[in-house]
View (tube, rainbow over the protein chains, first blue to last red):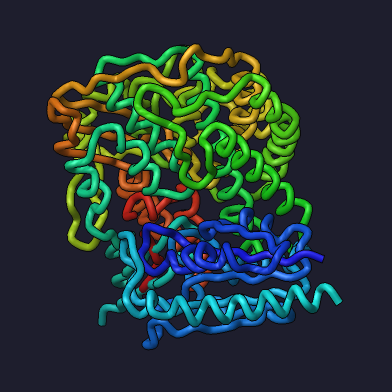
Length: 156
Length: 429
């Protein structure tokens, strides 16, 4: 039984980097045995990070929708995600599409949960916006909780 | 009363980035075709100013997650030529091998994930994967091999960090490179299957008439070196680029539009490379091209997917040759003393010619940088192609015309994240 944590984003596009930052923040504290990956939105890398995993948490930025810094938990285990809210800008395939590609190929972990943090600023440049920075703690806690639950469940 | 019909596609799926296409009809004829590109200010060119010359390969590699090696290569070519440095043969071999890795990953992504669904009547790779999981899995595996080559030599696949002006930070051992042989042999076989697969697709009749521009080198199919040549007899060094090509600002687009000085449209990329370099392909790749019906220059942009697949075969085959030819260098990099002046560099990104120019102060600080990516160079040719295509198919219902336009744009594999450092698509009647 194996669980993976995957951060998705582009560190050069402002808040698009939030998935990568969260994974770095969580690296020291994730439950033992959780595989950690980061990637930009590129389909094969994300799908490969799922290989051999029964459970996955994917962390990505969400398109601005009036509540920057809002953290959303989206369960992709059984049904396709709404692709519009997930970022799919700098590359051809967004996370929602890649998850569906993995599902079509039979390579999606049985439990797959996406945590999205709504971004405010995706223009070229380094650094997160203030509302996204302020959301890091709450997002990290929610992700950690999910991972703990997944690893407990999978040990049973 | 004049009938005005506009087809607009706000979001251009399956191209690398975001952009918009608008087609406007007036009384049944095409009034305007606009491929709009949203470009944040030329962030990277500005960002390079004031930086040390040695930082250029690392900074420019970050412009694109798909073709970082192209950016690094054109950058080091420009800076090394200015500083009077020629890298030893093992370093050149490594750079070419790294570049093969990038071609494999970029072409496999485009052929399988982005373009093949158009020809087979699927909305995208997900739908294709449901019906043809073996093909999509083959595409992902090919792409993975390209990534592995980039990781081994470049240090990391998305934005390789190992390339430096003068060579590499670390040169791999022969033994390390040998680990690529088996995956590359499998990839070459998968690439040959790819050529057979795509050559069976239906290709609409279409020819582009513009000048085709690509690098040419007497010894090999162009990746990391060569002179700039064309089907109209152009033959110049990188340093003469600005005398022959100009970039112009067009109000609706944030990207600059390129054309030949004097006004001619030109196209770079796989069709141009193949037209000018077919005889320099390896025997295996050449044979695959012939079997796929490519014999001599091909000007049908819809068949670029076949040329790209032939280039996949070549990149795998060439990578195997380079792994075999590699001898460990005495030093991973030669010393480079900065020189004041202007340096020019070119290379063949998967999408076409990539030009860099740097002006350095005597202490090696970058005073000015200019980067002309292939998608900006191709934008005028893409618009002209779309206009002719739309005129020829004006009778089609909007939805079908929209699909045909999208497919046509994807013929050029536009990396709008490079051209604009972003993209989305539109059509209106």
